[in-house]
Length: 109
Image (cartoon, rainbow, N blue to C red):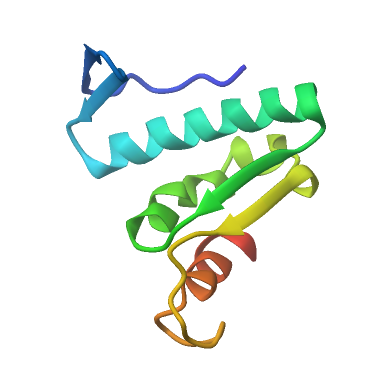
């Protein structure tokens, strides 16, 4: 079980679920990474794999903490199946490629 520092956010229950409003991008990133880590662990236990679809933009940066302690050592990366959404029609090595952004900012770490 991970210990998450107390974050500053508001919770609002809506008819579509819970909405969280964070005070900072760092708080959002910490909360998002904790959520993805929990989903990954539960999915691997239940189904043997974790499937995630990544878009580009700020999402990759927000997920960057997955490459830090404690997540880097506790996530079973071999069980992850990663799909791309909203990919641009450019070469994988192009600066505008969401794949390149994810590879450089997350996957190679």
